[in-house]
Length: 631
Image 1 (spheres, helix red, strand yellow):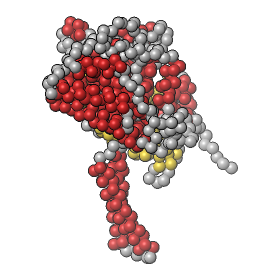
Image 2 (cartoon, rainbow, N blue to C red):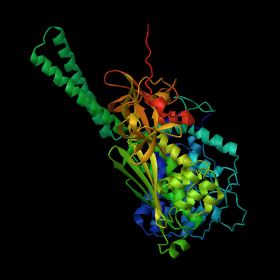
Image 3 (tube, one colour):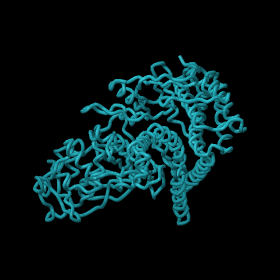
C-alpha cells in the first residue's frame, strides 16, 4: 500500500521538479568548490534546498524536510558570511545531497523516507555551529566507487552492474575508528552475481502500459520516464497547424462535392490541386512540429555528470574538471533515457583510466588538473556526442597484444589491423581483465555494453586516440527513433527497407569481377576485399535471378556488399513496431506513398542469425535460378 494514496500526481510532479533542482544543486556545488566566495552560487543553492523543502512539506515527508532545513540553514550562514566554505564543509554538504537523493528513491517507491543517518545530522549541526567536521575517506558521499578487481577468469560484476544500472557497488573497507562528529563509512552489501543480474534485468524490463508492481500500484519510475516537458509555444504551433488542416479539409470536401456534381472545369481542378498541395505542406509542418515536442535539451542529461566526475576523481586522488558543451542541443526524449548509462560509463573510464595521476601528469609536462570534455552538437540529421580526455591515450599495439593473449583475435587478424580497428578491440566481450583495469591502455571494462546500447539506438561509436595526448569517444545518433531514413531495395518486385545509416554506396555487380575467397563470393572495392551477401539468402528466399546491384554496407566492424535485384530510392520511414509478432530480422514496418507495406530489416540481427552460414560461393551467386511456373 502506498504511503501517498490520493497524492500520486502531486508526488510525480514533486519528484520531477525536485530531481531537476537537485541535479542543478549538484552542479553548482562542483562550481562552488572552485569559487567558494561566489555569492550568486550560494544564493542559488540556498533557493534549491528551500524549494525542495517546501515541496516535501506538502507531502508530509518530515525526514526529508529535516535534512533540507539543516542544509538550508547552513547555506544561509554561508551566504551571509557568518561561515566560510571549507573542504570539510563541502564534504558534509555533498553527503547531505546524497542523502536527499536516497530519500527521493524511497519516494519513487511510494514510501515515506526513513530518518537520515544520525551521524549526518550531527555533522550538519556541527557545521552550523562552526565546529570543525572531518569525514572519513569512505564516507565522503561519493556515489561512484572505484572499480573492483575481479578474480581471474571471472566477469567484473561491479562494472557490469554499474554499466547497466547506472548505480555502483561500494566495496567494503576495514572499519576505522571515527572521531567525534565524523560520518562512519557506509558499507554496501556485496551482492551476488545473480542478484546483480536480476537488478539489471529488473531495471531494464519494459512494462506494458498500465502494468503494476508487486505492491499492486503502477511503477513510479516508469511513469516518470514517460513524462515530458513541452514548451507551450510548440503546443500552440501544433494547435494552429491542426486548425489550418481542418480548414483545408473543409475546402477539399467542398471541391469533392463540386466534382461529384459534374463540375470538371479547369478552375475547379486547379483549386483541387492547390488544396492538395496546401494539405501536403501543412501535414509535413505538423509532423515536424509534433516531432519537436519530443525533443529535449541534452543538458538535462548532462547536468548530473559533473558531480559524478568530481566524486570519482576525489576518490582516486585526481584533479579532474568535467567541461560541458552543447547543452542546448536537442534530442529525442526516449533516446535521452537510453543514453544515460553509456555516457556515465565513458566518463567513469575517462576519469578512472584515461587521465593520469597528478604526479604522472606533471612528469609528462601536463597541467596537474586534467580535463574531461562532454559535448553534444547537431550535424545535419544526426546528433554527435563526444567524451574526450587529455590523458595518456591508447596504445594500439598493446591492445592487439592483449587481445591475442586472451584468444579474442588470431595472429593473422592482428597483423592486418590498423589503429582504428585496434582501438575497437575494447568493445569485444571478454576484453576486460585485471591487467586492463590497471594498465596504461586500460579501456576495456564493459565497453561492449556501451556499444550494444548505442547500436540499439541506431547509432555508432568511434574511438580516436593519440598516445600521450588523450582519447575521444564519438557517438553518432539519429535525431529521433520515430522516423528512420531508409534505402528501399528490391528482390524481384518485393521492396524491403534497410537503414540508410548503414549504407555507404550503391554499385553494380559484374559477374566478371566476382571472385571466390574461402568458398565465399567477394568483390574488390578500392583495394578492399568485401564479401557479397545476397539478401535472398539472408532472409531465406530462393534466388530467382542474378543480382544486378550491390549495396556497400557497414555494420559495426563488418563491411560487406548486400546483393539485390534493384532499388527504389530513399524514404523517411515512419516506423510501426510489431509488438505481438516480430519475425527474426525485422525491425518494424512502414507504409509507402502507394499504400504498400514494407518490412524494415534489422541487418545486425540477420547477420547474427546467419552466423557462419551467411554468404554463398561465386557459382551459386551468378547461377540463374529457374523461375517457378504455375500450371
